[in-house]
Image (tube, rainbow, N blue to C red):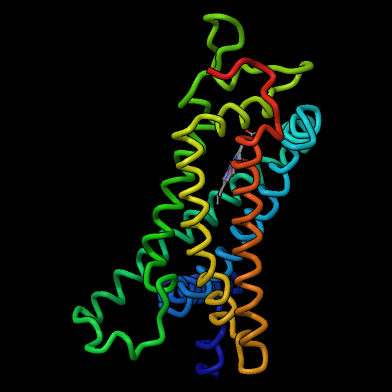
Length: 262
Ligand code: HEM
């Protein structure tokens, strides 16, 4: 009988033990290289989804001020708390992607301080070898981009002779004038050049990133390898062409400014 009483546990105690082991499993997964790779792959695909969605939204600049301003108003005012859920989610996946990728790269460099004697024998492209650097450049660009368009800290617009206002104050038909913000931002030569260079770096990152994510998730087997390579190339090219079209289209006058350009 003594044996049977010693095996009886308080129900709460059992739950705590189960929770502890679930926590330690989650931590071991997060801390392992395989776990980190899976999280990097999933968050990377999430960021690709955001980039496509964002590009399609920005293309509305060519439909005129009411289209893009109405769209921005819908996202920021009509979705209520959902927009904040989306923003916090986006920030979380962005931070997870960047920090885990940096940690993984540092760990693999520590594990192999001396590079392969014959780098040519390891299947690697410029895109795959520069993933960490292209990722850091895109990450720094996103910080700059938020300062530029979301916080309007970088640049002012002359809305009347000698009257300069920040992007945040631009208004058109009672709504925030995202149209003028994008047109003025991209009609400024140094900003346009920066945006073009970053789109190319993003393309190089995605060229390897998309297929690598599928490979990590076990979807790139012999049967699907070429389809997945093609899909990676198509997604990277779509984002490059769409975003370059926005910058170059503004330069070509496809979205005429509402105010005088300074
Ligand atoms: C030609 C290229 C791009 C244009 C014209 C553009 C335009 C904009 C604009 C106008 C906003 C502010 C929206 C608002 O406050 O209403 C914005 C926000 C943002 N953009 Fe871009 N963008 C471009 C490329 C990118 C790229 C390549 C990324 C990242 C891969 C990116 C990430 C973001 C993020 C994270 C936000 C903040 C979203 C939020 O506050 O909810 N953008 N962009």
